[in-house]
Image: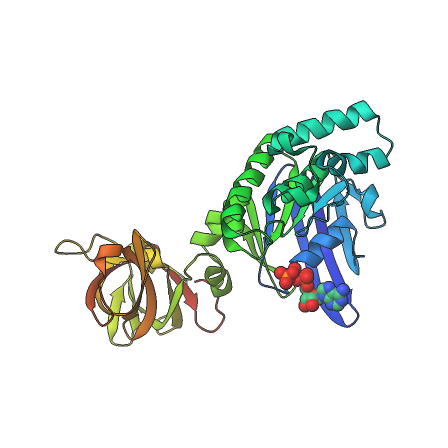
Length: 364
Ligand code: ATP
């Protein structure tokens, strides 16, 4: 087990600058997820920690030791890739134990570790099979088993679930989380899937164009996104951004969206925005609900909206609404909405809404 400390890390591929000065401290035993859109540099960062890429600048410390000049095998990290690359002619047991045997570990110890890893991953009954006799999910478990038996200081996962179908991905996600609870080893996990990031991480590191856009506990990022980029990346369906203006009158504040005036609850009125400042109002689908009762509950405002599009999911329906002239997605009870063109009274939870500066796209 070990902490990982990255200081001023750069990675250039020729003239292309893929990782642009990253500082990151990952405490011992933490499950950190590097997430971001394709090309943001998350795999490059992971591969540089593993030693598969050479850093162009900065330092990587594992367990208090600078490892920049260490070969991958000397870093005591184990990496799991999205293609499991099992040896086709070897049994599951031999695939899992191969690396240990290659390092001349005594046979009895190899067997003990393979048996224990198989138990943790629920594949004991598959140890005598060949890879071609396994499903995709089982193969991925074998690949994880191969990493576990090495008992590394840090696990590195590079999109390990992206070759699996949706159902299996959900199942394996739970397995990986359970595994971390059991072994409590530091994990750095790369994905572009925001649901994987939200569900697995102790801490999310959200990357964009080779830098860290924001990092923190999943719910912190979800509820207090620092930028529209973070707000739009986490959450599905996405947050809607409605252009408007911040208005201040003494201690009272409001947001105007076109002709519609939306008073802000006192808790939100103190944000650092100037009268007349152009803003984006960020509303998540769950911040909008069908109006109930004669008046909205405190902190909510009631507004009429027109339904543009309905996407039922079963118990809930996602409805694209026209709200104060702009499109906004609402998550409603399935029976709260019936047809496009319908007019609905919607209650908006202004306590939960995000407010961004329209120009900088940063949260106010
Ligand atoms: P994805 O989710 O698509 O894998 P990523 O965030 O993991 O994306 P990286 O694979 O780290 O992105 O790549 C970051 C950038 O560096 C990309 O623009 C990519 O084209 C570039 N890049 C990666 N490897 C190389 C290489 N060997 N040579 C040149 N450019 C590279």
